[in-house]
Length: 364
Image 1 (tube, rainbow, N blue to C red):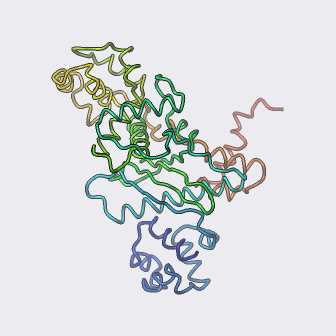
Image 2: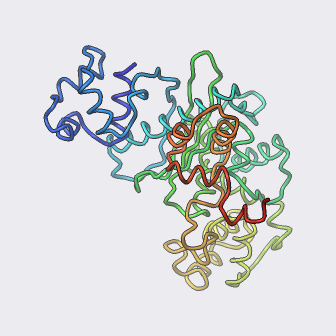
């Protein structure tokens, strides 16, 4: 119990055994820390307090049983991602998932059931990239979405039982998908995306990770290609797009493309790629647009959906935070516990619970 918690906390901090020894200023050796993690030794109370302070976690955290484990972790990473990067991200995800499961247990709620849109509840083998289009249409039909743009993709996935986490991940990691196993409970799928990305990129990554959750890795089509096509088709349905812009186009103007990206809430470059995928614009027309109207769009997003200072705020996951405030307002958890779960200062939580002075100015 303590060993697993200590190893998780160390990995989350991105520390090797030797690094942690140095942080503890030689009060305990790396070999001893390794024995703690393997359950071969127990730290003294003095060392446990030092570990707690160094890793910025409560002693209670180290003594509580593990409630979950991750399985089937699939990273969307760039070249150069190290094993330490992966371990650090997995530890951060597991710790956040445990907080989520804890508040659900306090409220005596079961996790929202994973509403798998595939009738056989198995991942789909893709033998042709066009089958990703079909899969996207099937998911929309199963979830009764019609063909309209999806206003809040994060909320949609949470409603269908997927844990969505937006975390500060290393720059080399866009996101990941995994399964959360719990003792005597159903398995819960989880999608994690990097907070550093803009809203356009986060939405596409979410749809991309949903595709990976549904597409069998054994597919003959490269799973990255299949998931990318699924994401585009899920966010920008062909039928709806053709009604908006026509069956065939020779060119696009800047303002029209900006309005389209705002309609579907995707990047302007993704909007243009989708038009080429569907044959609405020819490949030569696509290249011409990239070299003229859309020059530089792959590196810099034109007229981003989020204003400066809003990064990570729009379409943020809300269910976990809402459950914490529910438990707090009902006296089921204390302010310090809410602060621990939400990773926020107590005074900010008090303000959020009671409202600001200005909000309450008219109350008598």
